[in-house]
Length: 227
Image (cartoon, rainbow, N blue to C red; front, side, top):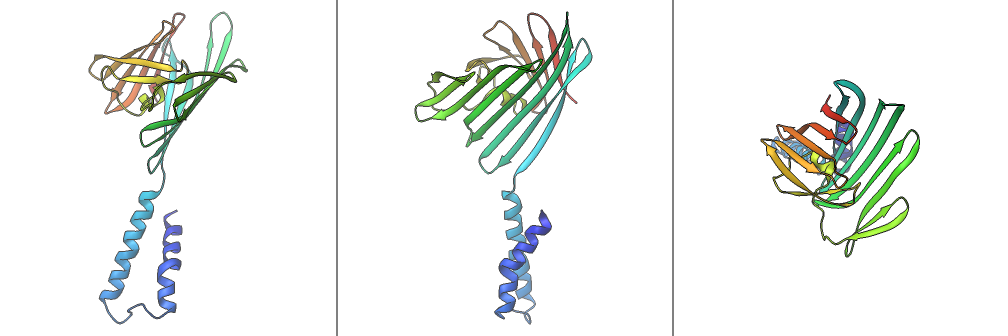
């Protein structure tokens, strides 16, 4: 990518100057100025490039790895795109395979759109979207138009908790339940979120990054830990 930028800058600025004989070849300071300009333009071009990162997590049940989760982040200018893919295989009375894919797009700190899809043993169990509209946000659940979220701006959702440590008593949006949830700090860098279905999660942070999530379900408890 960097060599391509250098070639583009040369074709765009240096070669036309040479062809027009405007390049100050006999002035030692002239080339230095041109070099400085090229470096400055190159720095600007590199700064405008997207910053991409993938964070990997293991999913554990009773101390055994039962799945994996990848969180992909892409920052470009004021836009942030998040994509989370997880696959978990567990066995109770029978084997269960759960695949979840979530996507969120933020612009200037505002949620623009999000989607969460969940498949269990190959059958779709959840497909929900939230999109910003003029009056707030419009939700869709399993192909049917849902309620309108009367909020001008959603600044954080549950996916964003994997990227940033929240503040105590903050509110985050659940793309699955399509409503706001309260964040409660229970100890330094550990936060609890109670879900509408009676279950709850603990989010733990190390150096501002989510390092572990404890998911407490009525039927099981699993941990999501940095790989």
